[in-house]
Length: 71
Image (tube, rainbow, N blue to C red; front, side, top):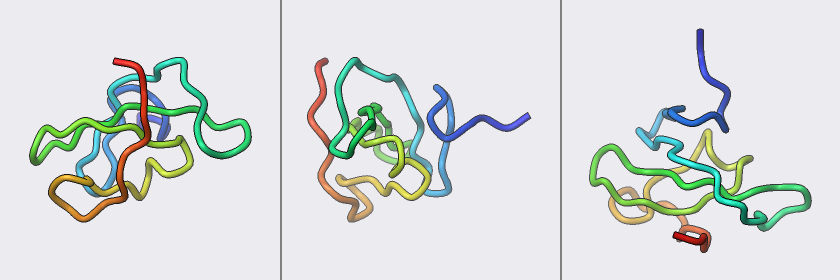
């Protein structure tokens, strides 16, 4: 059984894992911010749900800067 792209534990093709969903709005209408962790360098950053499948790490893989989220 595969996980949906916004489910905790989902890992995209760029080794970015969904860690949690803080109660923060995303930058698009009806989107939420999710916290992802890069499995290569352990960097954590925020991303909107629709971007999760294609996210690249902003610290080690040239991805876009992460969204702000409450710690």
